[in-house]
Image (tube, helix red, strand yellow):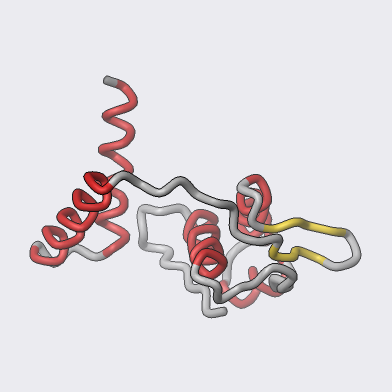
Length: 124
C-alpha cells in the first residue's frame, strides 16, 4: 500500500489519505480482514500529525470500509456497494477528464474544480 500526501494540494491531507485507502479497497488491493498500518506508523511514514491519520480512519470507518478495534487495530471490513452512476454522469466524467488532460490540469486540481461545482450546485 503506497500512500502519498501532497502538502501543496488544496485537498486536505486527511482526505488524500482517506481517498487513497478507499481506492485501494474499491479496487481489491486491500481485502476484507487486511490490517491498516497503525495511526502512529502511517503518520510517521507520511510526515503528518497522528490526528490527520485518525481523521482519515474515522472517515473510512463512517463509510463502512474499515473497523477499528482495540486489540486488532484498524481492519478492512469490505467495500460497501456503491450505486452505479447513470451513463450520462459517467460520460460527463469522461469528458471532464479528457478536457482537463488537454488543458494539462492534474487530477487533484480537476477534482477541486468538481468539488467547487458541487458546492455551487448545492447552493442553487
